Length: 56
Image (tube, rainbow, N blue to C red; front, side):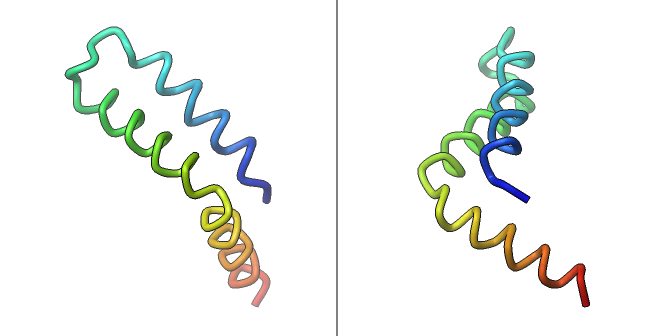
């Protein structure tokens, strides 16, 4: 599983929720998107580990 498509979907959901920038859903999506995009290497490593666990 690649990180980029997941981040793209998260960004899409964030844009759909941006009508009220004080809404908890928007804030959660926005901050998750920002955090993950700043730590893409770690996120990809996590996804690789999760994929390895599901194969066991």
